[in-house]
Structures are given as C-alpha cells and as structure tokens.
Image (cartoon, rainbow, N blue to C red):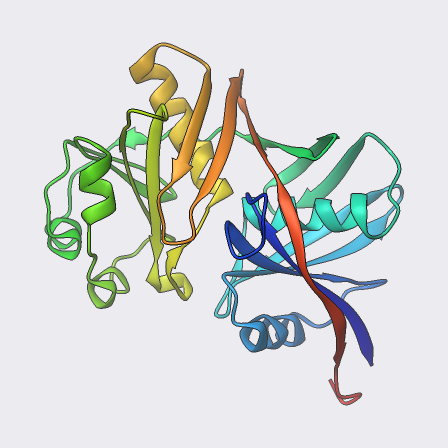
Length: 263
C-alpha cells in the first residue's frame, strides 16, 4: 500500500525552522497500530493523519510513542497541505478531533488555528518538577500540562532540564514561560513522557499560555516566541473560550511511503 506523505515546517517562514510535522492523507482510517508505527518510523514530534468526512475532516495525531488529544503544529501543517498541496478551496477547514471541532482559516500565507481555551489553575509544585528543571518557578499551574512561570526570557533560555526525571512525572508535558522584551512572553515545552524531550514549537501549549497571560497582562492579543533551538513565532488572541493561534508554514518534503500489505 502506497501513501502520500508531506513534511511541513510549521510556525516557520523558511525551512529548517519552526516545528516539523509529517502529514499523511488517507481515504479511510488505518489500524491505530499501523499509524503509530508510521509515526515511530518518521520519528518527528508529531505525525498527522486525516480522512475526509462530509465536507469536513477527521484528524488524529501521533507522537513516536502515543496518540495525543491535541496538537497545534501538526494541525497547522495539515491545513497547509490541504490549502496549498491538495487544492482545498474553501475559506475554512473544519477538523473533527479528540478535542472536538477545530477550525483553521487562511489569510494569504498566514494560517490561524481556532482552538479551545484551556486555562491552567494554580497547583502544588512537585519537588520532582523543581529538581528536573534545576530552578524554582515563581508560579506553578496545571491543565493537562504543567505551566511553570519564571522571571524573564534569559531564565527560560538557560533552563537545562533533566529529561530522565521529566519522563517519570505523570503529565503530557511541562511548559516553562516568562515575560520578554521583544515579545509579550516566551516559552519552551518539554514532553519526555510523550517521546519528545523538547518540542520546537507547541501550538497546543498556547491554549494554556494565552488565558494565563491575558489575566496577568490585561490584554487579549499577543506576540510570542518559543525559544527552542529551532524557534518559532506565534500571533495569538483570546476570543471568549477560544484561542486563535496564527503562524506560517513551509513545505520541506513530499514523497511516498510503502506500507506492507499485511499491515
């Protein structure tokens, strides 16, 4: 069985930046074990699979180790493929996912994700979190992921996490964030338990960060940067119980994968 595959750099305006995601268009679902094997073989933070469904699309995301309920950069990558490679000509794409309906619109080269807001709530700081990051945060919050707030951008850039310790913490991921000078805030994302030591740019993390910073800064529109090695810029807006996450994407690779017929 031959399948098309694309590799897209999401939240980037040039290759070798942002967050790479694989996108595999399907006519019908493969077994979950096969999709997981493809994701493991790709060895990217995320591989997205989608199936057309009555003018909309069903969308699923897999890390090299697990299926996840929400992924921003692979949704952006999938939208790029539909708009730019597969001739989708409507103004909005609707994806049906494990996190409900997700909408994506295109304005010239800018793609905007419409995701549910996931405001994090204050929580107790686990000693293992502080030990894993080597520094005590100003605040600890949680909603699916831990959100740890620090003093400034330099602290975020200089965190050198212990991924072996992070792997033992019961959470999808750990977001670290701080105010910045050139941006409203910066962030990084660690998810060793999900098979990703550090994710370059994590769209879904901003469903937690935007409501947090909206309350702290008293505003609803933001310019943010994920200060990973590859890095990526995001334009963000809080609209009621939704978060708009905008960014660019570029195609790096287009090809074919060959799945053995017994799979």
